[in-house]
Every structure is written in structure tokens, then in C-alpha cells.
Image (cartoon, rainbow over all chains, first blue to last red; front, side, top):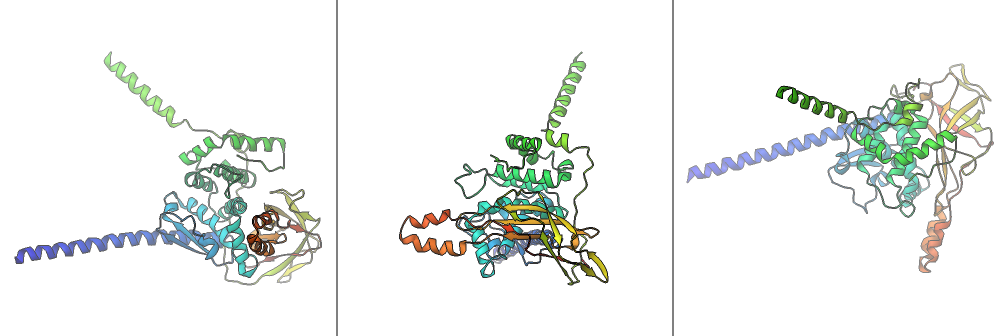
Length: 232
Length: 190
């Protein structure tokens, strides 16, 4: 009788120890990710002389709910969800994600009513600000010493292609990527000439899926046109 | 004989694997236009120290009027003129009438519902001054009409579909006139 009681007690004790150990390792993992995000985020803010307060957080929620407003707009807080984190392979790609969100958070500091109007405009017309955010993200990354091609690889891996462009409130991912490629080519050609991502599967896939858009850009460069290219 | 066949098969397998490993898509455009050329690495601002709060305003104006909708493209160089001498510790940093090149970083076109256009200027190039010591960008906005367009839209929702017609009211273009003062900051100890 007593023997059985002690065995059960020992089993419960061991199970609790294991549960605490699992919790601890989970917590340690989250703390590591959080400190990585804080460091990269602060470096982006400092290098770019951004004198507005923006904080960064890691959230284990798998995906950003569709109806939930981006906290970068409402709370000036950049949240990296686990659903996005799983696409991040290195610090450059982490910087790519954070740099885009920093620009959106910055918009909430501009405009009337302490930036409420600016935030509302970003929410009401996200398509308009999406391309601007991509381009500024490239600038933020370069100034902070990150490789901007990582923005291409991150978007290539994580953003699905929409069906429509004209009737959608978002840009086609292929169009965004083409604009980023054009921006890096014209402003920071050094990074395309010295591209450590060139042989990665994600970048190779970008090259494969962007043949037409790159051809359009090539034409623009050859003809010396100043017109904006209507990417597909 | 058998050994020779096995060796040949192994060689072909190795050769085939090697060929597959090197079959990567090339970016011919980048290869022909950028590779093997002496391209300078862009400026990286990682040596900062923000302890000192001293800043000196630098007042500029464009030498010709600019409009976001007319003859302005991203990447274009815009010339500003310094409106006054800028001194620091008895040394003239920027002379009056010095011409300063800046770059049109991004043009955000005006949108529906009165959302204004904006132009972001960056890369202000001053002679003999480190660009890391200046404000990063200057953004010029057009007229923000969303302030009255959204209330109007909501007021009109009781008369469908008139509220939706306000979608077609666009925001103002971003304009920068030559008599307008653009103020950026020089941080001597950053």
C-alpha cells in the first residue's frame, strides 16, 4: 500500500520537474528571441537617427488576425509574430522585417491629433504606403549596416501572391519585389554586385519568378526613361 | 572490365551531381552592368554617440519650385540653397548661398479620400561635413483633405451611395516653393 503511494508520489514529483524544465526552456528561447529583436531594432533606430520612441516585442501568436489593426500603427509597437519569425533565417532578414514596421510606426507620429490622422490614413490606404515602406526599409537597413537584399529574400519567402492588383487594397508581391530590386539597383548597386544571397534558394526563386519584371526594368535603364514602370 | 564500368558509372554520377549543383540562374543584367566595376560601398552610420544634445539649425530653400505631380521622379537630384552662414565653435561650417544637392527619396502620390501626397528628401550633401551629422530626411506633405472628407463621408452614409462618392476626392499634391524655408539640423558632436 505504502509502496504504491510512494511510487505515485515520486512519479508526480518527476512529472512536475519535467513540466518546469519545459517551461524554463520555452521561456529561455523567448528571452533569446526578444533580446535579438531588441538589439536589431535599437540598432536600426540609432543608426537612422530616429528620435521617436518605438518598442519591439515577440509574440507567440501564430498569425496576425485579419481584423486586428497592426500595433505598429496603434501602439507604436513593432510586434514580431511567431508566424513571421519562422521565415527569418538571419539577422539581415530580421532587420528587413523590423525596418518595414518602423516606418509604419513612424507614420503614427505625423499628422493632426498627435498622429491619429496619420495612423488612420495608413490603415485606410495601406497600398499607397506599402511601396514607400519597402523603399525606406532598404534605406534603414543600409544605414544600419544590414544587407538590403535580405528584404527581397524575406518577402519572397513570406508574402503570398495576390490574385488582383488594381482591385485590391494591397500590391502584388511580385510588384513590390520588382520595386525593391529597382530601388537597390539604382541607389545601392554595391549590394547587388556583392550579393551573398545570390545562390540561396529564396533569391534564385525570386530571379526565376521576376523574369518579366526584370526585363521591363532593363528596358527602362536601356532607354534612360524616367517613367515609373508598371510592374506585374 | 567490371571495375572499369563501375568507375565510369561513379564518375558520371559525380559529374552529373556537380553539374546540377552549379545550375543556378544568373542575373545577366547585374553581371553586365555592375560586376567588376568599382562601386563604392554606401555610407553606414554605426559610430554614433547621442550623449550631446547640441544641434544647429540649417535653413535651406529649393532653387526652383517643385511639385510632386510635375517633372519629379524618385532618385532625382534637387538643388537647395543655404539661406545663411552656419557657424560652430568659430568655424564656418556652411556658407550662405552654398548649393546643396539632395535626393528625392520617395514620392507618395496623393490618394483617395483626401490623403495627401508627400515627397521625402534625403542625402543632403554638404561640402566637408559628414552626412551622419545631419537630420536624416525632410518630408514635405500636400494638403490633407481627409480631415473633412471622412466626416463628410460618414454624414452622407444616410443617403447611399453618395458617401462613396467622396472616395474620388484626392489629397493635395506636395509642393515646395523657392521662398519656402526647409529646416534640417546639424549635430556637431554626433
